[in-house]
Length: 141
Image 1: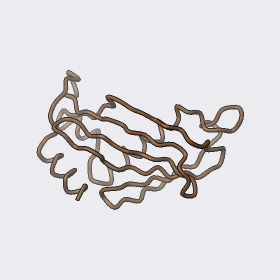
Image 2 (image 1 turned 180 degrees about the vertical axis):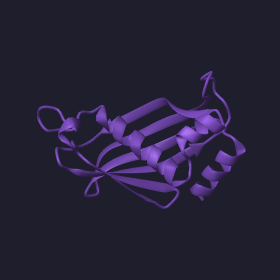
Image 3 (image 1 turned 90 degrees about the vertical axis):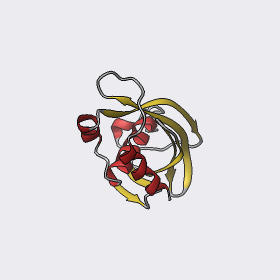
Image 4 (image 1 turned 135 degrees about the vertical axis):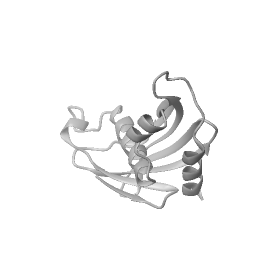
């Protein structure tokens, strides 16, 4: 797995393994959620956000609130796919990510994933801290 980032856009290369596929060698549809999650996590890490530290120091966690996925073409065993991640919207306590899974530039699946921030103990929604908001705003420029 490798990550390339230009701050506003992250790209994670993922190899499709046997464990990712069904009996026909095609990526099982739910595994795209895992690929998209990894890409979001690595994009945040590349910006300097460690999610364990956020939970421990700022009592803040990111949780998925809503996800929509459109499937176009199947990924198959041994394919190298690239997961592209961009932030489409940033609000007081939510981010909307647009993500794409591509193989050699061909769109395989796309998703819109809304993530909200919650308190690490109560799981109640909270606002993004000013430091995190500033970091995200800088990345989006």
